[in-house]
Image 1 (spheres, helix red, strand yellow):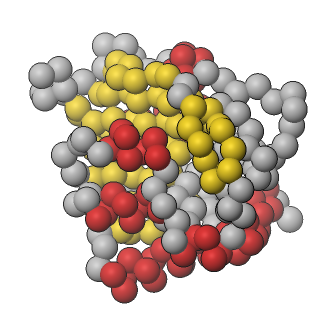
Image 2 (tube, rainbow, N blue to C red; image 1 turned 90 degrees about the vertical axis):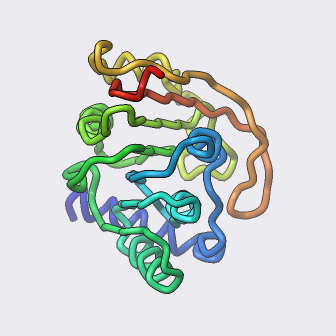
Length: 213
């Protein structure tokens, strides 16, 4: 079994494991902070999982392209979007290999971590090229490990937003950092347990006609 097949099977199992919670999946709180004040447009949701972010964006007028390696998650989101009439296009894509075509006003990568090979910097740089002028690339990472996380490593170090921005090395004449911080929040896991976690939030905005007004 190759890396793609192993990753697809792993994330299918994760989706099925928490399928009951997935039905009522809510928006990631940092995305709601970032996108809530924005004028709706086109959005790309990288690693959409159960689809809470995609549904939330669509309910606020965004036209969403949502991608994930889990065929089960994508199929569930696609069926739900067809039933509800939400403007969500769900695609099964391995982000280690490809990205969907098109350009977007918002590209969102929420907790895009995986135990399988993924050149995340390369992938995010490619995703940045699909951001429209005056659009945003929002990268939200774990800054701590929740007790319910699939990956438990006491020695794991989470790169800061500034370090992620440095790794991406986007042209400063074309991009600037709109937000870079590490806030705490009280989170609830799929099993209902709670814990205080840290998020690493990075929002990069592309220059454009309206961007500096």
